[in-house]
Length: 201
Image (cartoon, rainbow, N blue to C red; front, side):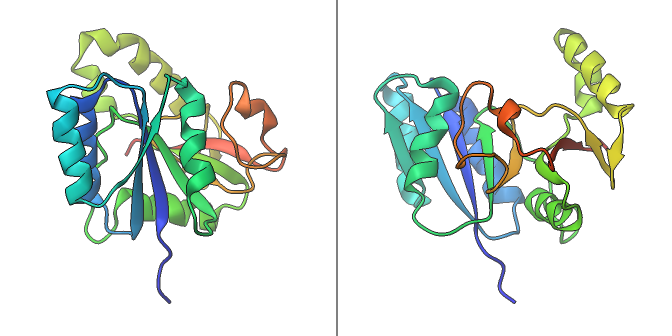
């Protein structure tokens, strides 16, 4: 049975250098079929942005440009315009490097399988790299938070924990209303779903 494309939507505002690295990490490390979308939240148009546009054109990535910085709401322009049916979607900020493949399993295959295995998980984010955080002094507060999450309850091999918009897969029916990103969206998750992180191993 052929796997369905999973849409991946990246949101950015004036993060061209990070975004280019993010795009490359997706193409280098993703085996599962996907379709990439980028939402630009009214970034400054300069030479770096022109370079980004060339990459987007060469890779046939769909680009949506907001006329102002809509912050979290920026995702919604892509969510509304994705013109094929999907049951899972990945939303992420642009300053992420997606993890390397492990054999024939990639990060997207892993996230998708975990949702298939665990019907109570509605949103699953990638854990932060603990080793990386330990080596950077300025990430000390993040490290403390991640170590606290690791001690939490598990669903399968995943940890029940808050997940922001950083590299997470969502079920289409996650919310009690239609799928739409807004401030306070976590409070609108259906009561039968949990938010989780993958473990950091």
